[in-house]
View 1 (cartoon, rainbow, N blue to C red):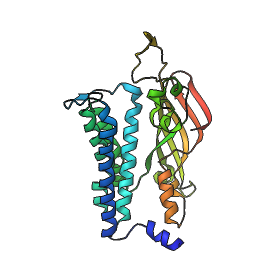
View 2 (view 1 turned 90 degrees about the vertical axis):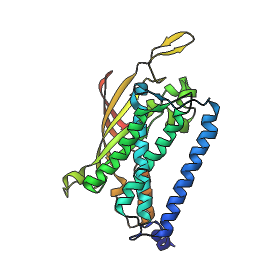
View 3 (view 1 turned 120 degrees about the horizontal axis):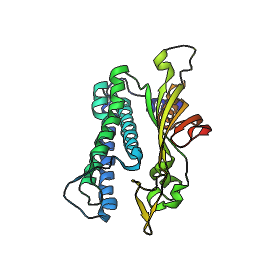
View 4 (view 1 turned 30 degrees about the vertical axis):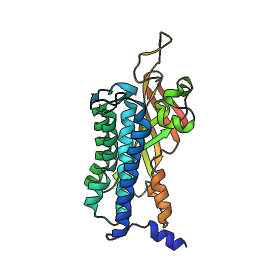
Length: 285
């Protein structure tokens, strides 16, 4: 039984047409149904409009843009790995797999462009491009992902003040509350220095976050009063673990490690911000 599971998750050495067809049809179907669902359940509540663009680059201390980079990168990584599983050539993995996140998120952006509530954001489009570029660029340069984009989250006091905007409950807050989100560039030390004394799984991570945000911009008015949000940017320096570098013969475990490698492992962390200067966290999520 273990051998069967191991063979199923093991990437094919040559093109496996059956696997490739499963991957292609599944991704097209899931992507299409997701866009159709968004169009009917999300955008249907707002008036349609002519295609238009918006400039939202100054909102949310750019945390939403980092979210687009992260999503594009991770979806691209997933696209590559599924095509690698089916034995597709490396060139096609990058061409059709690494651009999966960019393609899907750009399609969502187009739907935004036809909604009177939102609009096509060139900032979001650029972030989507950056996420795909981060993955493709490393594969072309090093043929491996030495720098991985990761995410971490902790609950904050701000969501309870605006649950309609920042989420109500852990799952919604993890998606909507930018105050508790941190996006990381996690670099594998061994990949850069090739020193046998350095653990292969050890990473150094630089994170970006923001705090004090109750709205996209500073000008939030409630009951005819301007709310002071005390917004500030935060930079973080921490250690991390590259789960994909953990040695195992189990293809199932390798797949699980790859999925969870998108989440930053909690470690002692140094925070730099404009309010306190330098702050130390014994463990930071």
